[in-house]
Image 1 (cartoon, rainbow, N blue to C red):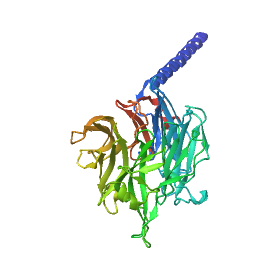
Image 2 (cartoon, helix red, strand yellow):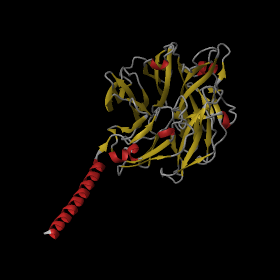
Image 3 (spheres, rainbow, N blue to C red):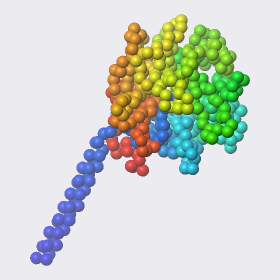
Image 4 (tube, rainbow, N blue to C red):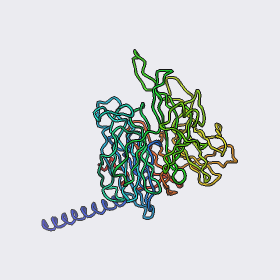
Length: 474
């Protein structure tokens, strides 16, 4: 009887173990089949922005993307559209920012990465700088602030799993923008320091292994009529062939007033400007084809390159594209100047275009208070991809479009919406796949971490939950 009882007990234990294993296997399998609309949950701070671009590239069937992750370090992920497979994210470098818990501004946010793939297939990112620090040496083209601009390259072609940092660009950069020309030449544009610095570019003809010395194209300069310095915020992209397009606005960088209890930099930004750059001849021109002296000063810019004056209105983050005729189209957010509270001023996306003879400004175009990027898909079709905060606390990412004959833009498709959320958006991915046009980061109160989304015409690309929940896997 005693032996029989032991035998029965053993059978029950074995059955229980097998049952638990079976349940665990089912649960694990179930976890892998649960799909979520974000590809990672470890975006950090302002994880993406329009100014650091491109944040993604579509290349040989795969979209490669980058963003700011924990401790402001750069992260890179990829998505294979044919087999629907995600890889990463992998940490691609170490930023000098985001590591000091005693710093008043814990998250600087200026060192977000931009990405590029060279002709040999190696993946490059530039990241980590907000003007550099005095310990990095003298900045002959501007002033210092924080961080260190850095350049990292994948150790193998089209492999995001391992990286090395190359010491071949100055430490003083911020707002990195990559452009690769059809012949493989790489242009890296950035501000060479903090607010009172020139904007420069460097050229690489050997797949980013070496770069030329920085060449200034927008000049910072002290004003003689008030206590301020001229500064700029440009955005650069390809036009046709060897040409690049540049949209920019003017930053009035006021001196701090002695005796003020609280010194605060106020982002006074005005006007809209446009010029082009022929990378073959090295010439900069305005929209009428006049050759411009560089580095460009405010005095020359106001006369030769100004698209619109925005007296009493502040500007923020221009973007530009062109139609099949090479005519530029500009989008930029514009809002009322509110003294002492610049960030609270509602800014509406405004739209400008060159009709072949003059700049047209469509102020009442129906676009929302928002920011994002512009695209021309057909000769008469203008499209914006924008993030917006809807009344009632709804965060929304949507596509807006109109033809040249129509007066107002219409919201034609909502691509993502979340309750009690704000979204930060990247510029359009380079050579985008229709399913993956841009990246957004979901910002919610109570946490510095962000869910990251890769969004295209059908909305966000899904990923298994156990792969997307990076933080819970650490």
